[in-house]
Image 1 (cartoon, rainbow, N blue to C red):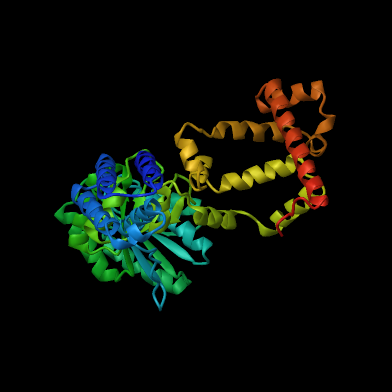
Image 2: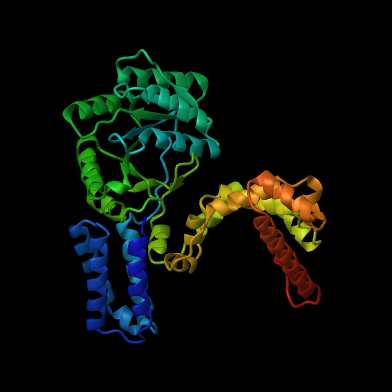
Length: 440
């Protein structure tokens, strides 16, 4: 999403960090580049102008000149102002003191509102909640059925009335159903339109008055650019929003919508959609996103993803196997599957400080290659996975045929695995001699 903006910001940051002494002219030149980068990223021109003015005011303050590293001090100011621009602090979702909590999702057609409802239900279920999805879009053909399918994929319950005519009555009935059946969160998938009209707003206002939602969240498409900001502003003025959910943040849009939406509407971004999978919805942290834009990575989100997907007991067992040199191809396959659960590898690389720049410079991750590796290992027998040294020429040909790959692919994997095991032995040898300590 922010790749173009991030590349420009990193170049500007590199120039500032390289200067031991800053002058007003240096800062003016850098801020001119910052303003241009924001405008090219489709940031609202008023937002870009105000951002640059705040950075300039802070950068010309006495604390910068007194600093031993003025360049780095200005970078910190840019980071802080970016964080403020994106909302300042992470906003936790409000839950009702007396369940159920009602979350009303609103938005136009094509923003991914129904899919987002399923993702949100899946996320809340992982957090120990018992959500129910409500099909309150009675305008769009097959919308009710879509909610049922999405709910099934997310592993949550759906509430639908296919023959209903009044969406407000459906929501009221759903809230009563939730109370009776112990659902502590009601997620309402409301109707949308191709554009904002009086009929849509009147329906949403009636729904809000009848259900008294704890959260009204607008689902907006980050790919829509400044149109998304305009839509958010109009929804907020007419309906009153509690937050935004930005979808398609994994796309190749310039990112201006996310940077402008908070400043224009005053509404925080609550969640971002980072993919098509049911688990591809993340809480939004302004400071972490600012770090990503500046090429500083996002280690905290990476750790959180790992904690959600990695099994702690399995990690201990893997450490034990590494110490005893018992690491097999089956273990390698298990670890690869665990990592892939965390999301696309290119997204994971962006979260590691320093690797974001490497990727921008041309580092590409071939997800298909990982699929081929998995197919090769799956085509092996149990003995071959645990003792790859038994794999001779005929076995390699059989494995290649079974996995739809070539003998060269099989040879490459076995060679790489053998090199990895040899490296592990060397590390273990250094550990035994006291040159290297394993972290416990």
